[in-house]
Length: 401
Ligand SMILES: *Cc1c(COP(=O)(O)O)cnc(C)c1O
Image (cartoon, rainbow, N blue to C red):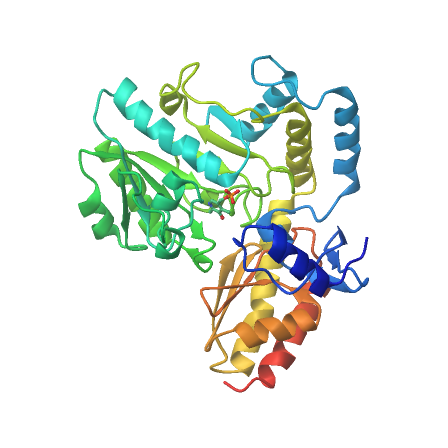
């Protein structure tokens, strides 16, 4: 089955809802850090399916547990006890200071669970009519009605009004604006420690600790969306662990099962009191097949010290990009990020540079019009990063602006 790109585009127009603006590349196979198109041409994957395939594509150790578990038990529903989900919860909770887990199938659903928990905790446990979730401008939290309302970007809301009540966004990194926004109605503050879709924007440590104190003082839950930043991506297992933050709720998904759809909402024992049997559920959440895969993902991340590898390689890459920045003044205006979550901001719209990189065999993302975003597998090598950096240098050198 090797259809050309043009043929796929034509067929897709006929049968799929037009929800995606796709890159002009079809992927027929992938392994490690490489993507292969239908003609057999290889590309270096610097995006990992948007921070999903942290261990690279189809790592043999995951294929092994996938096959073994598929033969034993794939699905049984959450009406029954099963050990695989418990093993995963124990492993996941051991990576952070939280006490309870709820499993679901995506990042949006993990945030949806967090929002529902915050509301129900305030109402049922605290006896307070506090239901509002405050999030930040530029954030991304998902595409369900509640999570798109929490998302601090207007484009995801276009045409979907009326939106659910009880959400408010405040300017990015502006503590006094947040302080003014918190009221008796506030249930939770929801934030990404490093905004991903928003253009790889880290929140300052001082801001985070001020938010922590504010939430404690006002009895508001602090919820971190680690859907993109988690699972070693930022150089620590969770991005909040770069700071002294102690969130009440953490959501994760993307890299949790390295490409299979899984999400989780982790919370403190106190916040968990907001749910009781029947409050929340999902058919596939924490199914045995994906649970063993995610458990093995965590084992491998810890065994191979991949968060540390992400940190070391991230600094190495930022060094390369900073060298480019000084060699080509004006063309690169900022290099930022943490671990292998990297942003290279250009001094001009980046569409053409992005396109030339793709032609040269490098797959990455352009966000906010001028930020080249790299989210490579954590198993990428220095040699690959160097190869990308010199290709970028050559392209920028010959680009007009
Ligand atoms: C991708 C993403 C989501 C949404 O995850 P889906 O699995 O697409 O629903 C939520 N929050 C952040 C920070 C993300 O990057």
